[in-house]
Image 1 (cartoon, rainbow, N blue to C red):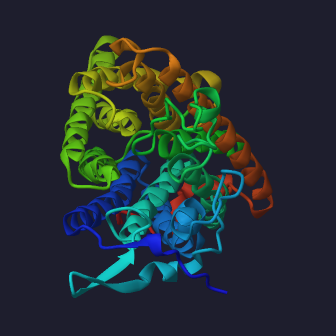
Image 2: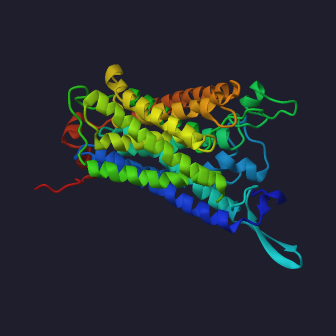
Length: 447
């Protein structure tokens, strides 16, 4: 039975904000094909198509399930007015299929008929909000694939993408952005730690555009899968060189462009804050590229194109949760440290022996953790370095740790459940190239 939506779910949307958010959603959707170029260029020539297909496959599977039940799980209670389930997720069947978001209501204002649409309390239609959030879910899943390059069955990856999005991503996005236990709501743990008499959190967690939901989430899942699936044949002995560095640079450029929709779009309005976020995003990203290249200059005596592209991504990752809370100078500090940390962290896989093929852990997990925690230090209104107390820092550390444990445990369970399907291709297929084995294609005709 389809339940009627409450009257306060309807409103007249703002045309300017709606146009901006449609543009932002389109920019963020572009980021996943951009990621395909970035990852594809980093892979070897015999694996590039599979690497790109893992990103495109994520677009297909996650888009379908987000429309069916993902949006309902993440944000449904904000529209229906129902209670969520333990502060972890909303009823997946309340808005199943998203048809209710298309409802309209006609009212009379000043003697004229005015059409209201479902907005759920926002200034944009809920259909547009769904479109925007769908693109976040897609790229989060796609990011994980970089840790599994050149060795995972495409069919198993597609099954994993559906299960992981449902069990891990949709609940985490509800917990952080949908009023769940990682938000500043009266039922959130920030309110339990630092609440007021009316139950609200005096220092709510800050995750403006996805430090926990996207980057810590994807980075931790990548680490778990790299450990469970195992390394490529020859890991530690073979030099895995990028086959097409111009692809890497193109992917980084398109990611940077799309990230303005990612970060500035998360303001959900075309206003001054969105402009501030644009500036902070650019400042942090440029500084992170300098930080990464500085490490290369000191360590290797060379500044590489791949290092520049990787520094760009590290800066974008770090500023994502913090972009609405920092000053431009704070963003520069955040970015340069992110570039340095990630440039140093990518060597951990060789030290500890896990095959994070394209450095998802070193870039997304490390910079995502830094960006999330650094808010407690650098936030203009509540950061420790701006003369404020320790509370924001404590809250940020707690949400980062919670995301690590939540994602790590559930990803481990999913990975083990899917083992009977088979994660890895055969060593012979891996040697000959996963493109030929899994897709019956090759990227380049060399005959």
